[in-house]
Figure (spheres, rainbow, N blue to C red):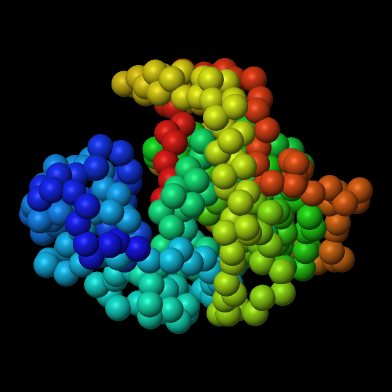
Length: 354
């Protein structure tokens, strides 16, 4: 906790320690971006002097930090696992007044926020915390922490189409490539396929948009695991506390990344250097907007391979050998691979995360 006494002369700040905006965020003053704005607005002082320079570092134990004239004290770090119901949004502020995920976790002492997001229609595992470092490690794609989803789509997905999805489809911001798509079963009566999908990225509505590009609509999407953390039988709308030990896998992922940084980062410059060419060709495996695609004649949501009629018959099983997405080392962390070539002159995959 920040001390109320001074160990430095007025106006002196630490040359080492924690960045001021991170300290403010961890104390519950706001998000990191909001805290950067507070600093620029002159609302924060350190050891009696107003600080407006971003990047200023403080010692939370020795430095006296004030926000709007009130002492700032570091909060204990808290971690929650929630089984998110449909209809709840993952932002802490919403002008439309929709139900928020944070309202389901009753913790008046801490300013918590979601680690990444699930869209309002999706369900399942979501983490909440006030620990920005853990949130960054889990969300950033460079650390390759896998997220497993159980998905039901309207239409039939066989192994060939699943392989095509794994190879990647082109979205507006670049190429999206789920790490693993495994068909589990096909219900001929409902014309629905159940699948498991593994992601390492965190693009906005990535799974829904990826399937839409091949003419399939996602009917149900549930996240069931994040790294080694499992949703288990936690009832929908309920939460439970996690410990720092439960989140240790995120630091293990960071160590693995640092040990393989040169190899893992080798992909990024090549992808970013291939920019879209005006009038250039679209990759053959992704349908261009407004044009008929390879599936469904370009009409999203059209059923494939059934002649437009709802088929009858028994449920058909895929993967009779119990195929499931591969795990790696029990950490839910993707192991290093050789850098991949782009394979086309199409637009690059832009690494984004929430």
